[in-house]
Image 1 (tube, rainbow, N blue to C red):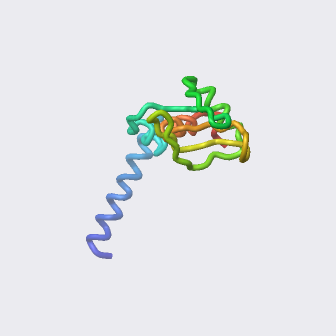
Image 2: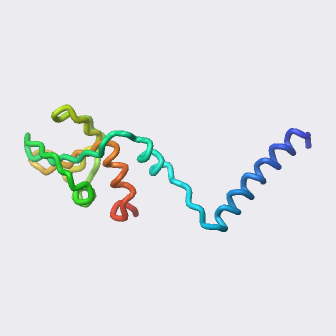
Image 3: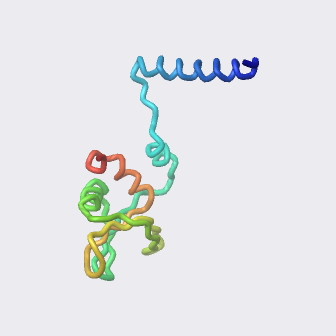
Length: 117
């Protein structure tokens, strides 16, 4: 084996050793979802749509709970009063309640216990 290959193997093993050592002391690293949530600087937003009426909902935990109870969450762009919403959770089409969330709110919801499988 070449010297370069040995260097790559040694660096890789060193990296694994550091990760195992940190794991020994129960050091927690943020997951990709948490990192995305922390880096996103916009305010989490939730809105409820009934027919053509939109109502902003300030209780994000309750919004997550209600959105999770819906059949499906789809990607859908919508702008209401200058606020952008990226996800819509609903049970079907037509006159059904729809819960609109921006990316920050959706990532927050994904971190909650009720969204974990």
